Length: 300
Image 1 (cartoon, rainbow, N blue to C red):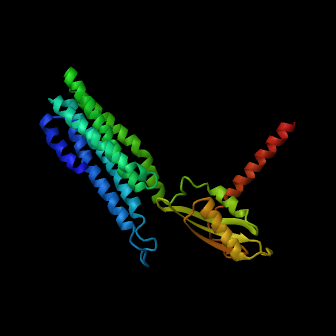
Image 2 (image 1 turned 30 degrees about the horizontal axis):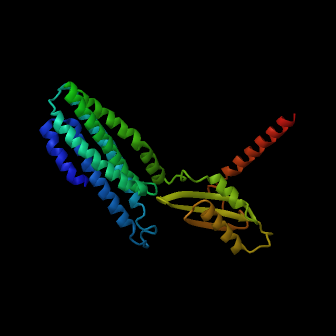
Image 3 (image 1 turned 90 degrees about the horizontal axis):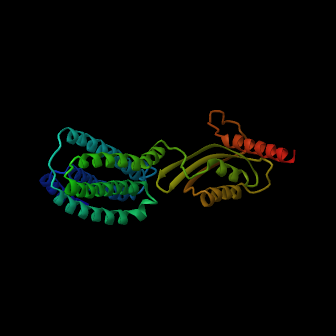
């Protein structure tokens, strides 16, 4: 749908002399490519894991989202560059043609955005494709406004002005996608996961002394992995297998961890080289101090 309409915009963009229409056509091209890339990433991510790729091709979706995010910024830069040339050398624009094509493009983008919206909530990959369509939707709105202003006033400078505005909106709207993709690629803690709360809940399991050497990261959208060392009380009378099952249940059911690797220990010998990551203990200690100060302050 977007690829077919792109051809229409290219033809009428050059016939009418509208930069906004040509820029929108260029963005339509990247829309088609981004949706195709998203589909390809979904397909390849379904390939099974192997000894060479123990997570399979799940990261393909994140890489596709990264490519789409980068291409959005490149498009915005190109639009601004072309607009600068239009400020220096204004061009004649046929407002009537631009209005008709721009309005049809607006309808096409509305349908495409509606089709992608549902799946985008669960996938950065599809979110990348949707951001392209939304940016193109804003471009279509700019094309329609530009055409109406030119038809009513003859002021052609509105075309590059609105093009720059749309480029800035593209940069702004794609920022959250860029930061989310980077967070996954650097294997940062998922934004929705409260790591301190996770550690506290795991330490509430009977027989657990402390959680340390904790790592949590996103493999792909909706797939969070966790590794942790659990120091168990050596005098605990309960079954260690049962403790492990409870720890996994807390991670999976209460915090949405899809894959957890938990190492049970009964002493800290041999773990001197680990990054212990026990900041949650300091956080809990600070919270207790605040509660005590608030209690005494209230009674005082």
